Length: 53
Image (cartoon, rainbow, N blue to C red):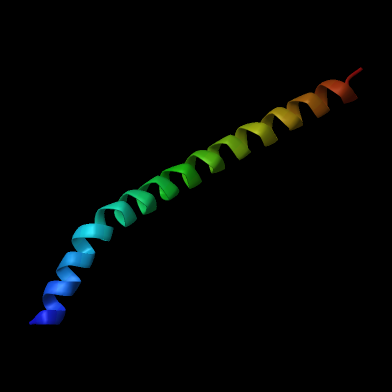
């Protein structure tokens, strides 16, 4: 039973921060992907504009 109490205490102390960190990393990964798509789109538009001169 001593190990169960230790595990419960570790989850209580570190479970929430780990959960929040994972959540934020997933969210940031999605946002970075969206930003990458936008930057690539803008680069294509600029390249088209430069070629039309």
